[in-house]
Amino acid sequence: MLRAMPLHCHCQIHSSPENFNEINIKVSYIHIYQSVAYLIMYAVRLNIVLGALLSLATAELSPRVVNNPAIAYLEKMCEPQYYNAVYSRHPISIIPSLENSPFPCEQLIYMLAICSANGTSEIDFLAEQQCLCTGSFWEAIEACDACWFAHGYYKNSPEEAESVRSSLKAAECSPSPPFQPYSNLLTTYNITSARLAPNITLTNDKFPNNTAVSNYYTLTSSFTPGKITGSATARLTSWTNTDGVRYTPTSVPPNNGTGTAGIESSSAAITSSRSTAAVSSSGSQSSDGAPREDVNVAGGLLAGLLGVAAML
Image (cartoon, rainbow, N blue to C red; front, side):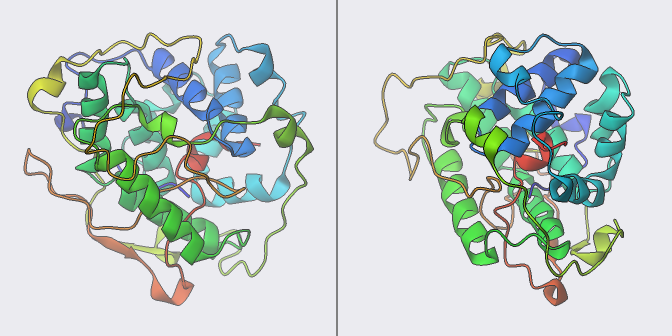
């Protein structure tokens, strides 16, 4: 699953605040690139709440068309504030209101929204890389995954989840210079598959109807995004890809880590690797926490983006 992290404005993600209406639409398009239907579900619902215009393809994934009670339950347990806001049709403040959320999955949603590249230049990708790789984004994914596993998700093992996280993190954080946006690392989304996918069932929910973060994760400090510094501060601060066009890299640098576009995710969601997030150039420390051992969570391939998108 994704990870929660209270992002603080001191991270200077934006030289000037972005319109959160725009951010919400941007996040929805990022999700269109996911192979996980549920990510898109959230994107669709968020756009409906904001009154944003959706492409016909995305609109077909209305919660009325794709509905999975198990995923809805996981969302209620792991991102309850977001879930309630979306379902009660609370207006535009959904994303910014997650800044100080205590839930890792909601922090993940917020961080993904503010870190995602607005443009397609090297500077835009560098800013995104700094924001995602020098803060607590990957830890948040691990913690969010821990929540899903703790509440009975079983489609992938913790080991499989950890492997995908590790590959995804390497692909995003190793390239120097970065040459593509984070969304390119996720496999393309198939609308038909989402509509026809069978509902999942949950097994061994260790904490039924209990949303306490302490059930699955021990948090000793806040999650934070990485700070954008140097030349990356000149990145585009207004999102321009309103049509949701997938970026095509013009070249792949030699120092590209394991970064190949289209890393396969599980059928449940996409995440990143476990690691202690590095201290950002600003000196701000990432969170220092770990999944609770008694929950037997080794990692999470559940909702790195799923937390952002899966609202059924």
